[in-house]
Length: 284
Image 1 (spheres, one colour):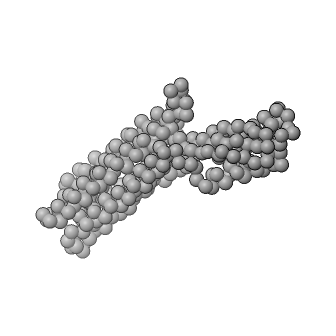
Image 2 (cartoon, helix red, strand yellow):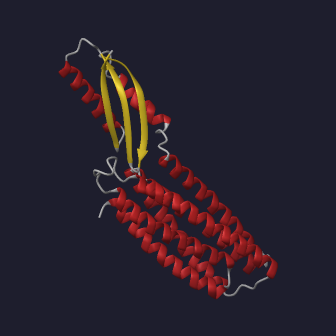
Image 3 (cartoon, one colour):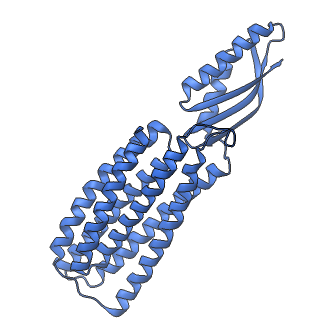
C-alpha cells in the first residue's frame, strides 16, 4: 500500500467512527449543531471513500487508452466531493432555520461537548497528516481532504461554542445559528475544492513560480542554448507535464545537441518533483 492510499485508508476509518459517534450523541442531546457536525463527518467518510477509489485509479500506470495516465481521476473525485459537500451544507442551513422557527430543547450538553472535543483532536491530526502527504505526493485529492479536515476543526469549535452558550449562558438559538455559520464555512471550502478540480480538468497551466523554475533551468545551460518557445504545461493528478522547443547553437553536432537537451530535461525533472518533460530540439 502506497503512502497516499494508506493515508486515505486511515482517514476513512476515522471518519466512519466519528460519524457514528456524533450521530448517536446528536440524537441523545437533540443538538442541531452536533447533528450538523455528524453530517459533515458523514460527508468526510463519503469523500474519503471516493478519494480512496480515485487515488487507487490515479496510481495505475499509463496504458494504450490512457497514455497520460489516470491522474485526472483525483480531479473528478474532488469535483464530486465539492458538489456533495455543498448540497449537504445547504440542507443543514434549511434545517437550522426550521429549528429556529419551530423551537427546540437541548439535553445532556456535556456529552455533546465531550465527543466534539475528541472530534477536534482527531480532525486536527488527520488534516496535518493529509497535508504533509499531499505536499509530498502532489495529490489534489489529499490536499482537498486536508482542507476538509482543517475546516472540521473550526466547525467542531463552533459546535463547542454553541453548546457552551446554550448550557451556561442560556443564549437562545445559539445552536442553530452556529450550525448555519458552520454550513456556510463548509460551502466556501467546497467552492475552493471545486475550483481547483475544474482548473485541473481544463488543463490549466502550472503556477507562475514553476514556470520561472523551468525558465531558470533552461537558461542556466547557455550560451549553447539560445532560447526556447512553445512552452506548454499542465497538471494531471500528481504529475506535471512540461513541453517546449529548445533552440540550441546550430554549430553543435546532433549528438551534442541531444546530450544538451537531455541535460535540460534531467535538470527540470530533478528540480520539479513529479514532472515529465518533453522537449523538441531546434537549431537556433
